[in-house]
Length: 78
Image 1 (tube, one colour):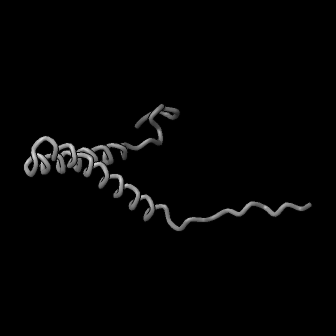
Image 2 (cartoon, helix red, strand yellow):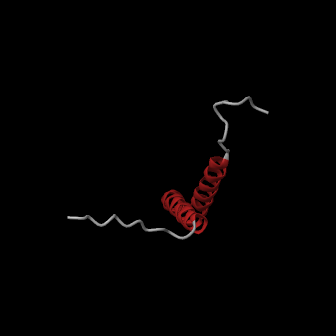
Image 3 (cartoon, one colour):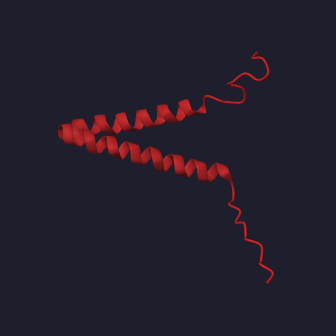
């Protein structure tokens, strides 16, 4: 147990899961691109892997964050 006020208090290692996901997707698509089209395919595959991981991040964030609430500016009283 950490003492109160410890610098890492309240922080979770959740960023590690995101980093591993991005690495696995970019590496996997890059490897697949290498098999299909050589070095050019590896570059394209890596970019596709990054795009897919970004899309997954956005979809999960949208699903987890719940319904959006739009705040309206208060009406000005002139």
